[in-house]
Length: 296
Image (cartoon, rainbow, N blue to C red; front, side, top):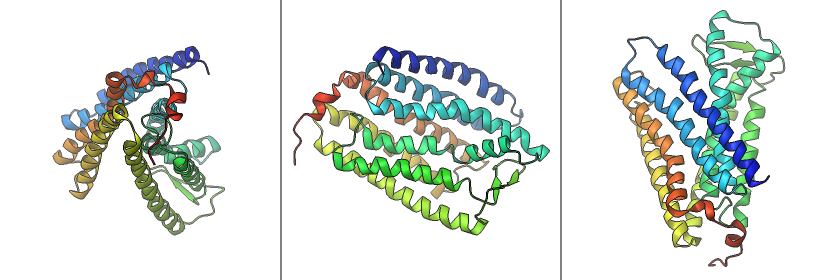
């Protein structure tokens, strides 16, 4: 794909995100009950309004200047999740009270809604692996990227096999799955194993980032430092919220945690954007970087 085509594509998508992030979640937030805690609304606005815009503009900056840098396209995946996932989630919530029959379109929509969170989690892992050059620190680390994609695909496949599919709505919408072969207990055991391996993949991606830091030149190390700071903030907020029991709760502490969690998510693409603008990552010639000698 040429630079001009890539730039047209990503900036068009960015414009779409701006429109959707202004209209779609704004309508939802305005429709909230007046008694809803203002901090809850702020947290929702950060996640549903600000985060997609930040991801989109950083992705557009990278792809439009360096379309061969895989990192930019990886950042586009959460943007795509927002464009498709938010309307689908809203549609399912509105559908739940009517307890619809499990038609094929409804089953497909609920199935997608049950695994589309992978479109945020796995890009974040791949960012650790690919930053800052758009490739792993050494060819040996390519297996981590392949394993991550395969592991995500496995979950997508498993999500289609339960005998009953729970939409995760309020009230609960549970649909009988005509192709389901896995009972509830079996699904829980398989998901437990899958999550354990996901944590191992996360550790491998984090190690890859540190390996890349060790082998990087001075400029690349400054770029990686920004991402490390953002990752540290995200981990402190995420782990702290669930260790304290506040994460996701309908309480004052839970609402405050929600605001900080949203900001910590935004910090990840923002850190990459700072590295781009401050250290001119978009001007890197990928071929020349790959030809540089590396320390053993």
